[in-house]
Image 1 (tube, rainbow, N blue to C red):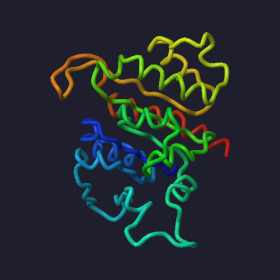
Image 2: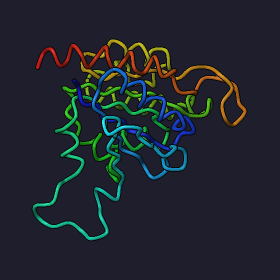
Image 3: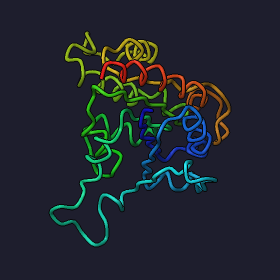
Image 4: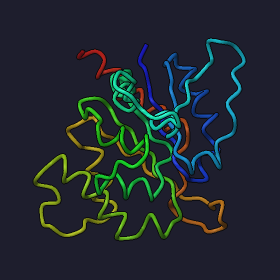
Length: 217
């Protein structure tokens, strides 16, 4: 069965990580998780019931251990990239989105994104405050990621609308999929778009991309 990396960033929606792990694990996927430092504030401790449920968890300390690095040691983000058949980043917070769009690789997850083999599926489920999601900065970052993969995008050089961007990600020729946030009352009390998509929608996106991709291998 496919091997899936789950990247988790510092959005409140990270409290749903256990639910996502259980849903993907229930599909038979082999899972490993990569947590940013901020994600640790929200992710509940994963306590496997049986050995088959165990999920390897990786943090920045695995990439940069206190003992230092010497030749022959693993380069963790490259090892994980080779291991994975696909990666899902859920939730993708505004900060990590900004790092991705600007090519930063200052933690384990952003190093993985920077070194990712974009012939493999990458599914992202953004989650942030409504005004963050609707910000032109967010639209510029999303457009930049597409532009990096398609030199002709955006065609006019202007910042596209969020609807235009979502359509572009839906029809993107490479296996990158954005599972858009939904409208609801957020943890901060604001109501609007920005809540992470439902777990079922994320799992559906993963399955839709992973299975055909494996069939081509």
